[in-house]
Amino acid sequence: MFKEADLELEVVILFLAGMTMGIAGMLLFPVSTGALPYYENGLYGLLLFFFALQMVALGKTPFGDMKRSKPLLAVGVLVAAVGIVTCFVPDIFSQVPRLALAACFGLGGLAQLLRMFISRDKLPTWVKYGGILGHLAPACGAVYLLSMLIGLLVWKHDLLSVRMTAVAVLAYGAAILALGFLLSKVYRLYPEAAKNPDGEASLPIGKAMILLTGVFMVILGTLLVPVNLGLIPFSGSAQLGLLVVILSIQMLASGSTPIGPFPRSWLMIALGFPFAALGVVSAIIPGILVPLLTLLIAVLNVTGGILGLKRTVAPMLNRGEGPRGPVPPVLVRLTGVQVAMNLVSIMFGASMLIANLIPGRIIGVILAANGALLLYLLRLLTLVDRMQEGAEASA
Image 1 (spheres, rainbow, N blue to C red):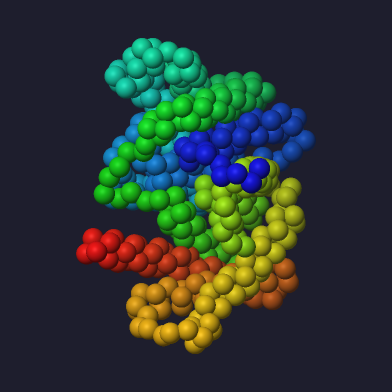
Image 2 (image 1 turned 90 degrees about the vertical axis):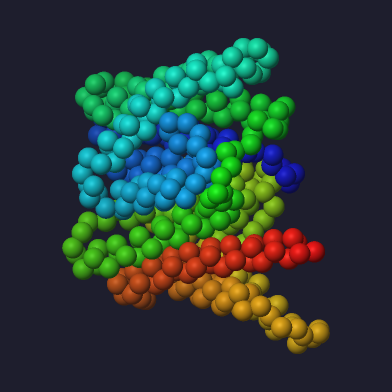
């Protein structure tokens, strides 16, 4: 359990998507009888966010792999923003999320199926080498065909009964999970197959998550101001659910948690998926997990902020014990941003634990500022990487 997990990010996202569809399918059965409420926008927003994550971190679109570029990165961020707002504000985009998902699932599934037959790197190669690669054809074919069916169901709700829709969604989730398990075995046997498309805008998963989390916080903080003025509706349950899913992705992809970084071990993987499942349920079923997730996020934010301050400030205090030298301005700014973010995290967590501690409009400003700090942190980290590359090149 404590060994490093050799699980590719693509496989992690497939497992998350398969689990999400499986949970949605299971929940649709009690929803069909009226035993549970159902928030369709929460599911749609989650799925759009998964598509955006693949674009930003992997260069993979619903229609196939693309070279990672700034336009693709911009499209990914835009899709993420639409998914986030779809989760937060019921029906704000009317039919846009439904049409976008119908295109991603339906047309995307069709495009991927055609590419599988046409591309020389796919079906012909799998048939030629056989073995485990030979299983990719039926696994991918099942996912693509079921994706087309899901696209039709999203486009036309009354195509099947709710129960039959639940069966189709469950089957799609199972097909995605099966493909994920198969790909994990393929990547262990053929590591070179796990290479993702390169390009000018390649982002490691850590930076990709900083970018998407920053966008999440800016949108959340901005929307909380009109929400607290009573101008627009808001789904606090879906907001908490999406936040938990984002935190779980960080755990699964890099071992990063709100209380600090840990080795990306199988233990982190084992903890990350149940954590994500809580977020998925909260996004789809309004109110059912709000008290639990509120307490959990609050404690994690306060604890993480305190520990983060300790990690950031301690090296500054210890500098006086050894030889001093000039500190690059970018590192000074980096430290300042980290201190500010930890303070904001503590304030946000405390406001969740203690009702009315901070007015709602002020919380919105705090969260938007936290998102802006995350985006600024991403810029500083990029500058530090360039400085390191320049130093290595000159050496």
